[in-house]
Image (cartoon, rainbow, N blue to C red):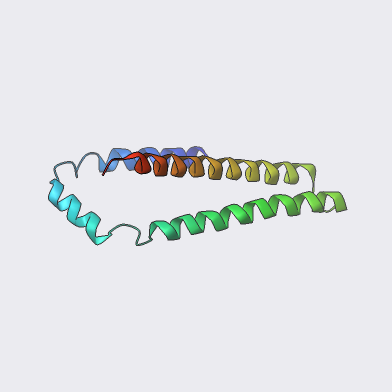
Amino acid sequence: MIDSVTGVKSLFSTHGLSGVNETSSSVSAAAAQGTGTGMSFAQVMGDMATEMTNTLKLGETKSFEAIQGKATTREVVDAVMNAEQTLQTAIAIRDKVVTAYLEVARMQI
């Protein structure tokens, strides 16, 4: 865990503010071309939904394994807590999307 935190810190210290002097036209052109990960917003949301479903299923599966005596209490608690955190994240994202939609719907044309 500590190594990963150190790795994140090194990312910030090595890159610095080298790209701050880009003009808005070059940033707009890059955004229009869709550079970056190459994934669309729908693909990212679809992947997140799939991961969420798999995490919830894993929590449920671990619960059934515990009832059958095949899983330890720690495994069940870890799986259920991970599923709960994933579900709370999905709910927060849904709330933000609904709020953004309502803001757009209130705009005057």
